[in-house]
Length: 275
Image 1 (spheres, rainbow, N blue to C red):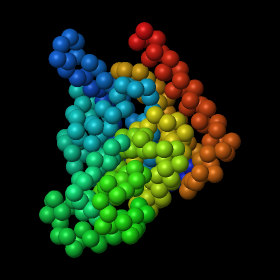
Image 2: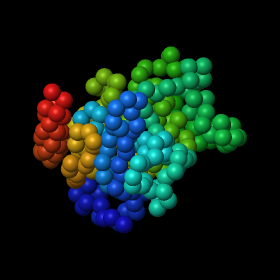
Image 3: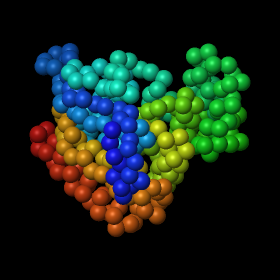
């Protein structure tokens, strides 16, 4: 059990939803030596906590996310969800990627309910859940539209809706807003926080954007260059709920500067090692 920092939320005891324990991952190479992606990574995520992963490109953030999702298995160490070791994908975890990857021949509604329908859930049951989710993601009235009729931000909302309709315990996000313009990205960040306030699941969020990490997270894990390790953990003790006004607050600016310094120094080391 862990206690939440008093500045970000009320000091309540949180159960570990995710535990990453001394995880390393080495990929076999077609030619040459095996490639170590991450080395001796350990961290946990509370049952309603948002943790952001930051670090240089290629440092293993997505590899860690894939191991939590069950898409990859650790070479050493283990990943636990609710104290049960992850051996593959499961309905308790869903992943949202940068590309929404919607089915172009399905409407918003049918894209959202595709997962449970595929697993045999009756359409009537799916519709009850989908109506709630569609309102939560702000797409009421767009149920009959097709992906080509939607903006980039709206398509990403559908991707979030498709994840939420499964009622996951863990939401895994791999740069989901990276391809959006700045204004749409901020709206999506606020939407994600509103959805999180409503459903309170554990979130692991990969981003290259320091401001995004500080705005969303309870904690930020800064990774080293490859093979990735946790270089630093930064607690974001900013009161929730959060809105865009917090972006100019002194505490936000202070934390952003601290994280920027860590990320910049690691990026410089990565550049030196590559030269």
